[in-house]
Length: 208
Length: 204
Image (cartoon, rainbow over all chains, first blue to last red; front, side, top):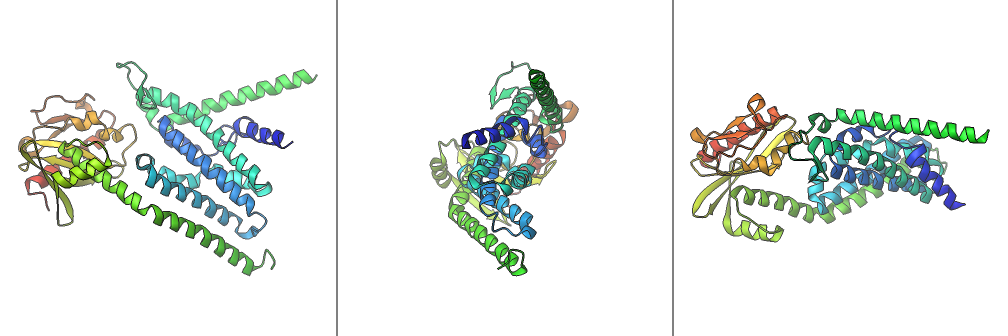
């Protein structure tokens, strides 16, 4: 019973209700970090960490939480985890911290955190909320990694820093700039929505 | 106590904030030493890199920094002196406006400012992948051993730039980054300002 519920949440967050291509949340960071696979992985790991833990904490304290200050407390909890992450990165991974710079602080404003806290953690148990935050983060990560692989190959001719394109390859400057992510996010949305619509019709046909 | 009463709301908010702030303060205090050490290593490795002194790791860098480099401070600016392979060099920390934010570099050159020894970037906020490439070895490598007639290194930015490193060390020219004209120009003037300061004696 519990397992099937967890599977439903997993499938929801990765596919049917994916934060990027269905809920259209967290697009700002998608534009900013996806020109480089390494930064993308670190950024989405940070978002996953912050979403999972803040959802769990908020769910644990939901019965004590006065409705008047609900949003303020949500923001306090999220900023707590993000600042903690920033401190840890600065102490133990200084190179990564230098590369990400202002992006880490911007996790606080990532709409996925608030979205999950409001939509799921406010009405579910702490462990399930943790799982929901974790899978939401993974759904975000999956889409971002796909986009960043394409952008890094075309923009730099490399993948995770290793050269994959031939030496004479002319890199596409537009791929490095933020606007190119708009094209790819739109294409991913297009593909996902078409695919989902197709499956929907197939299901209906089968029922008849 | 009722959950919606003002007293409860105030108390609850206060207690929750206090707990989180205490935990953050402890984490910050606990990692202070490490953060300071990281920052120190970043500066030391940049200075050693600009002087062209090789080092293996953080401990080695710190030892070499202590034994081979002398740090000076005048008028709030840091400068360094070192002798590498029989030649004395001066290094200065130089900041200037980039395209998006301040670029801070460590520049080492002969005390007369006529030959550049090396350059390292300490901090920059340029466009990742375009202006951000000023940190890459192919770009900074152009400066190593470059002659600076009249105390200037000419930056070929914009339409003149070929986007490939300039291998001629005697012509006093370096190639800018294609697609990052403004950053290249800014970087060129920061280098020139740094050479000016080295010629004037490191301080000022």
